[in-house]
Image 1 (cartoon, rainbow, N blue to C red):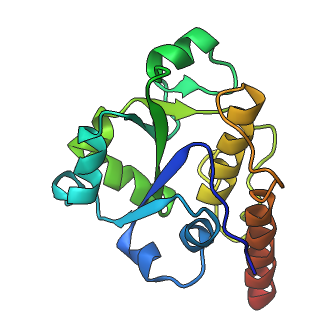
Image 2 (image 1 turned 90 degrees about the horizontal axis):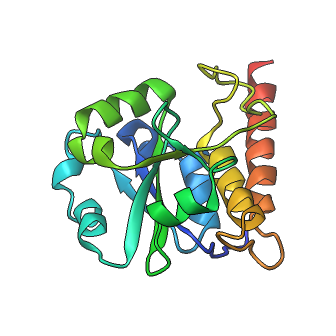
Length: 189
Protein backbone atom coordinates (compact mmCIF):
# COMPACT_ATOMS: atom_id res chain seq x y z
CA UNK A 1 0.00 0.00 0.00
CA UNK A 2 1.26 3.44 -0.86
CA UNK A 3 1.24 6.49 1.39
CA UNK A 4 0.45 9.53 -0.75
CA UNK A 5 2.98 12.35 -0.56
CA UNK A 6 3.44 15.78 -2.11
CA UNK A 7 6.38 16.83 -4.26
CA UNK A 8 7.91 20.29 -4.40
CA UNK A 9 7.29 20.36 -8.15
CA UNK A 10 3.96 19.45 -9.66
CA UNK A 11 3.53 16.63 -12.19
CA UNK A 12 0.74 16.45 -14.75
CA UNK A 13 0.33 13.13 -16.53
CA UNK A 14 -1.04 13.13 -20.05
CA UNK A 15 -2.27 9.54 -20.17
CA UNK A 16 -3.03 7.70 -23.39
CA UNK A 17 -6.57 6.22 -23.23
CA UNK A 18 -5.20 2.66 -23.54
CA UNK A 19 -3.12 3.25 -20.41
CA UNK A 20 -5.97 5.12 -18.70
CA UNK A 21 -8.12 1.97 -18.85
CA UNK A 22 -5.42 -0.16 -17.24
CA UNK A 23 -5.74 -0.70 -13.50
CA UNK A 24 -2.04 -1.42 -13.22
CA UNK A 25 0.81 0.52 -14.70
CA UNK A 26 2.97 3.53 -14.19
CA UNK A 27 0.19 6.13 -14.43
CA UNK A 28 -1.74 4.45 -11.63
CA UNK A 29 1.36 4.19 -9.46
CA UNK A 30 2.03 7.90 -9.93
CA UNK A 31 -1.59 8.89 -9.41
CA UNK A 32 -1.87 6.96 -6.16
CA UNK A 33 1.53 8.09 -4.90
CA UNK A 34 1.83 11.82 -5.59
CA UNK A 35 -1.00 13.73 -3.94
CA UNK A 36 -0.38 16.95 -5.86
CA UNK A 37 -0.26 15.31 -9.28
CA UNK A 38 -2.96 15.60 -11.91
CA UNK A 39 -3.76 13.52 -14.93
CA UNK A 40 -5.51 14.08 -18.19
CA UNK A 41 -6.68 11.39 -20.59
CA UNK A 42 -5.80 12.23 -24.18
CA UNK A 43 -4.91 10.90 -27.61
CA UNK A 44 -2.95 14.11 -28.17
CA UNK A 45 -5.18 15.61 -30.84
CA UNK A 46 -7.85 16.51 -28.27
CA UNK A 47 -5.35 17.86 -25.75
CA UNK A 48 -5.25 21.34 -27.30
CA UNK A 49 -8.96 21.75 -26.44
CA UNK A 50 -8.81 20.23 -22.93
CA UNK A 51 -9.75 22.88 -20.35
CA UNK A 52 -7.55 21.41 -17.59
CA UNK A 53 -4.55 21.42 -19.91
CA UNK A 54 -5.32 24.91 -21.21
CA UNK A 55 -5.45 26.17 -17.62
CA UNK A 56 -1.73 25.37 -17.32
CA UNK A 57 -0.96 27.74 -20.17
CA UNK A 58 -3.04 30.51 -18.61
CA UNK A 59 -1.69 30.17 -15.06
CA UNK A 60 0.65 33.05 -14.27
CA UNK A 61 2.45 31.29 -11.42
CA UNK A 62 3.68 28.16 -13.24
CA UNK A 63 6.01 27.16 -16.04
CA UNK A 64 4.83 23.99 -17.81
CA UNK A 65 7.81 21.84 -18.88
CA UNK A 66 7.61 18.75 -21.07
CA UNK A 67 9.63 15.87 -19.60
CA UNK A 68 10.67 14.27 -22.87
CA UNK A 69 14.10 13.59 -24.33
CA UNK A 70 15.24 15.45 -27.38
CA UNK A 71 18.08 17.55 -28.74
CA UNK A 72 16.46 20.83 -27.63
CA UNK A 73 15.78 19.75 -24.06
CA UNK A 74 17.46 21.27 -21.02
CA UNK A 75 19.42 18.50 -19.37
CA UNK A 76 18.46 18.78 -15.70
CA UNK A 77 21.50 16.71 -14.70
CA UNK A 78 24.01 19.05 -16.31
CA UNK A 79 22.22 22.33 -16.98
CA UNK A 80 23.50 25.41 -15.22
CA UNK A 81 21.67 27.23 -12.45
CA UNK A 82 21.42 30.18 -14.85
CA UNK A 83 19.72 28.04 -17.50
CA UNK A 84 17.26 26.72 -14.89
CA UNK A 85 16.50 30.21 -13.57
CA UNK A 86 15.98 31.47 -17.12
CA UNK A 87 13.51 28.65 -17.71
CA UNK A 88 11.81 28.80 -14.28
CA UNK A 89 12.03 32.27 -12.71
CA UNK A 90 11.87 32.42 -8.90
CA UNK A 91 8.34 33.89 -9.07
CA UNK A 92 7.05 30.71 -10.75
CA UNK A 93 7.00 27.00 -10.03
CA UNK A 94 7.71 24.19 -12.46
CA UNK A 95 4.96 21.86 -13.61
CA UNK A 96 6.38 18.80 -15.34
CA UNK A 97 4.20 17.37 -18.09
CA UNK A 98 4.72 13.61 -18.41
CA UNK A 99 3.29 11.84 -21.45
CA UNK A 100 2.32 8.37 -20.24
CA UNK A 101 1.93 5.54 -22.74
CA UNK A 102 4.20 3.37 -24.81
CA UNK A 103 6.99 5.32 -26.50
CA UNK A 104 5.13 5.05 -29.81
CA UNK A 105 1.92 6.36 -28.20
CA UNK A 106 3.83 9.17 -26.51
CA UNK A 107 5.49 10.28 -29.76
CA UNK A 108 2.15 10.19 -31.55
CA UNK A 109 0.48 12.22 -28.79
CA UNK A 110 3.30 14.74 -28.95
CA UNK A 111 3.05 15.03 -32.73
CA UNK A 112 -0.73 15.57 -32.55
CA UNK A 113 -0.65 18.36 -29.97
CA UNK A 114 0.59 21.77 -30.99
CA UNK A 115 0.60 22.85 -27.33
CA UNK A 116 2.71 19.89 -26.19
CA UNK A 117 5.20 20.57 -28.98
CA UNK A 118 5.40 24.24 -27.95
CA UNK A 119 6.50 23.48 -24.40
CA UNK A 120 10.12 23.81 -23.32
CA UNK A 121 11.57 20.31 -22.97
CA UNK A 122 13.60 18.96 -20.09
CA UNK A 123 15.41 15.67 -19.75
CA UNK A 124 18.15 14.14 -17.60
CA UNK A 125 21.10 11.79 -17.64
CA UNK A 126 20.75 8.30 -16.28
CA UNK A 127 23.36 5.66 -15.65
CA UNK A 128 20.86 2.87 -15.05
CA UNK A 129 18.70 1.25 -17.71
CA UNK A 130 14.98 0.97 -17.14
CA UNK A 131 13.83 -1.80 -14.83
CA UNK A 132 10.70 -2.24 -16.96
CA UNK A 133 11.62 -5.85 -17.68
CA UNK A 134 8.61 -6.78 -19.79
CA UNK A 135 8.55 -3.70 -22.04
CA UNK A 136 11.14 -2.84 -24.66
CA UNK A 137 12.63 0.64 -24.39
CA UNK A 138 13.63 2.33 -27.67
CA UNK A 139 16.95 3.53 -26.24
CA UNK A 140 19.02 2.59 -23.15
CA UNK A 141 18.41 6.05 -21.65
CA UNK A 142 14.60 5.73 -21.85
CA UNK A 143 12.77 5.11 -18.59
CA UNK A 144 9.19 4.47 -17.56
CA UNK A 145 7.09 7.37 -16.28
CA UNK A 146 7.58 6.28 -12.66
CA UNK A 147 11.32 5.98 -13.05
CA UNK A 148 11.48 9.34 -14.83
CA UNK A 149 9.43 11.19 -12.22
CA UNK A 150 11.45 9.60 -9.42
CA UNK A 151 14.67 10.73 -11.10
CA UNK A 152 13.36 14.29 -11.58
CA UNK A 153 12.44 14.54 -7.88
CA UNK A 154 15.97 13.37 -7.02
CA UNK A 155 17.69 15.76 -9.44
CA UNK A 156 15.68 18.79 -8.30
CA UNK A 157 16.76 18.12 -4.71
CA UNK A 158 20.39 17.48 -5.71
CA UNK A 159 20.49 20.77 -7.63
CA UNK A 160 18.67 22.72 -4.85
CA UNK A 161 15.83 23.45 -7.28
CA UNK A 162 13.36 21.49 -5.13
CA UNK A 163 13.17 19.32 -2.05
CA UNK A 164 12.75 15.63 -1.38
CA UNK A 165 9.66 14.40 0.44
CA UNK A 166 10.68 14.44 4.12
CA UNK A 167 10.75 10.67 4.61
CA UNK A 168 11.82 9.85 1.03
CA UNK A 169 8.29 8.67 0.36
CA UNK A 170 8.97 8.91 -3.38
CA UNK A 171 11.11 5.76 -3.08
CA UNK A 172 7.92 3.75 -2.45
CA UNK A 173 6.90 4.42 -6.08
CA UNK A 174 9.97 2.55 -7.29
CA UNK A 175 9.31 -0.35 -4.91
CA UNK A 176 5.70 -0.65 -6.12
CA UNK A 177 6.93 -0.43 -9.72
CA UNK A 178 9.46 -3.23 -9.08
CA UNK A 179 6.74 -5.42 -7.55
CA UNK A 180 4.53 -4.81 -10.58
CA UNK A 181 7.37 -5.75 -12.95
CA UNK A 182 8.18 -8.92 -10.95
CA UNK A 183 4.52 -9.93 -10.99
CA UNK A 184 4.23 -9.38 -14.75
CA UNK A 185 7.41 -11.34 -15.40
CA UNK A 186 6.10 -14.23 -13.28
CA UNK A 187 2.94 -14.30 -15.38
CA UNK A 188 4.85 -14.78 -18.62
CA UNK A 189 7.27 -17.41 -17.26
